[in-house]
Image (cartoon, rainbow, N blue to C red):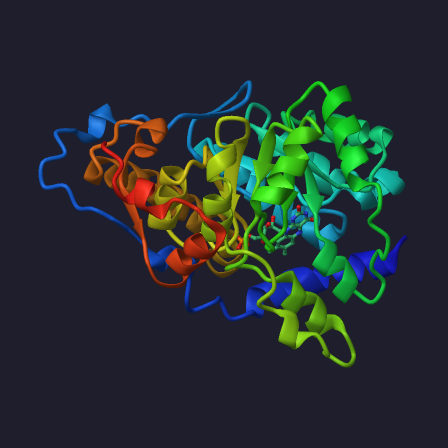
Length: 353
Ligand code: FNR
């Protein structure tokens, strides 16, 4: 059994659970305009959303975290129970360990067992060959495959990868050959217009921006290093808000998913307003599961569903696509980023609902 990998999984969970969450967030630089007369009732609100052929009953999902060790199998079972109970989609963590060692597969398969009818996303790294992708999907009877990009994490990880030369070609092949949507996903470092164009040119249609602002894998991997000499790099990358703004020119071509530092339903609704079709939450849901158990997580997910409805109502939006017409104002550092990069923040501020 690969004990280095197993210990790494446990470290990721323990450090993620004890890391202080970032206090300032680019989501706080975004404001909606209050509408006193929304002319909508709660019963009019529709939370369904689509990722290509998939229909999600709710626009939030539990993002990729774990699997591959006995303890993480128990966490996956609990997350899947909460997902099944609430009708929310769920991704698992990287399946590489279980593809290499069949005896670990049950720590992922439990997710499908607990949630036979729900939407489940498989997860592998972008360096994985096609047969790994097929095995990952088959292991879960998955509805989609997330392929994660995590170059900064690998570099800070002492035992991490050092060569990243043919990832784009591999992504192109995966997306052409697989029968389920391939979601290319960052892991807390965000994306730029240039990256999105590279993905689009490679035939990718679904992208999870995975921005900075929440779980920070430079911090997590740095904590695992004996010298802890990478703390200075922990602010690397684009926030989820900045990544969404970078994605504005690509929204007609790509289905965008927001994740990374989404703390509450308002952050999610701001992401939908900037064009995201769904929002993934990882660390915060793990913490609730850890502190309050499955019942606590189910309660929290129900609160999110209810609050999302209320927030759409506040904006007079009956559906997630309707939110894309609501004006949203970017201020502070976020506006400065837009100015520097030629992103038209005034168009967003002056949209007509
Ligand atoms: C992760 N994340 C992750 N992502 C991925 O694609 N494959 C993986 O195996 C993991 N593993 C993992 C473990 C743990 C403990 C956490 C907390 C997270 C990253 C995750 O899906 C997400 O991109 C980031 O955590 C940012 O979102 P949050 O946590 O800020 O909501």
